[in-house]
Length: 332
Ligand code: SF4
Image 1 (tube, rainbow, N blue to C red):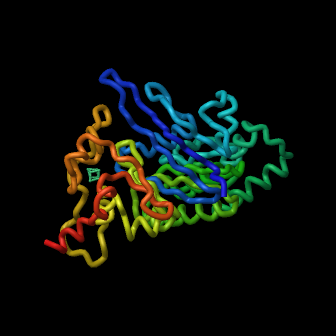
Image 2: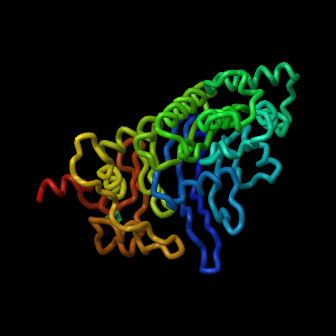
Image 3: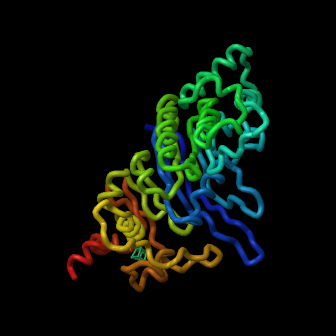
């Protein structure tokens, strides 16, 4: 199957008086039609910058420096501004972190949903347009009457569903969901994610889900890419990543997940993420890595295939199989 989206060697920097902040460095991945791809990593690892780079929404001092973003074979980075405006929403849409706050509180939902059709020149009669809006609201589990309400009359979860309805209104091929439930409580989060999954399957769109909630990722994604300091350090089908993580950072993330029977204190990944103004030499994870070797401080590890659709960037892969921290503990 041909990928619907192919990102090749994407580089995005933010230019500051102190030098470029290397937010995304040589990131490559692809999405198959209908696939759900999770991008995880700590805050500042470059996940949202990737989302905004794909949609060409990076504003100065940020700049996409290099790479290709191929949507059905067309490089979005080469399109004119007007061509790109047409791509947004119709071909690739965004549900951002605070999407629900983007709704105008004093304009009825119907009018706000209609804007997407109007701005993309979708020619519909008033009856057809109203039917489409009501169908979209039903898809996301809202009563059709919501169309005549104002955003301030809706709960946070309902507003986020309206944003999902807008995001799928022109049946895009790719939906980018950037922490779409971060402002919601856990019960509402679950319902909103179920809604996103339902509409994504309904229209056959691929989804990039950005976040740092591993539980949410495990339930939603087919495959996961792990970002660290602007780089993709591991990528794998979801079940494989949870059972056989290859990169030490991914292993530490997995081992830091709390379990129901855990009695000890919570263990996070020790140390702090590096400055992207002046990232560490060699492997960017080396200052925090429990397995650091001399070559890690000078040589950049390349992503290499470690299994079916599984890639990781670590020098240990050239040596023995990467031990997990838990396995190391057991042998002590
Ligand atoms: Fe750790 Fe070296 Fe692998 Fe980087 S390359 S993750 S420092 S072992």
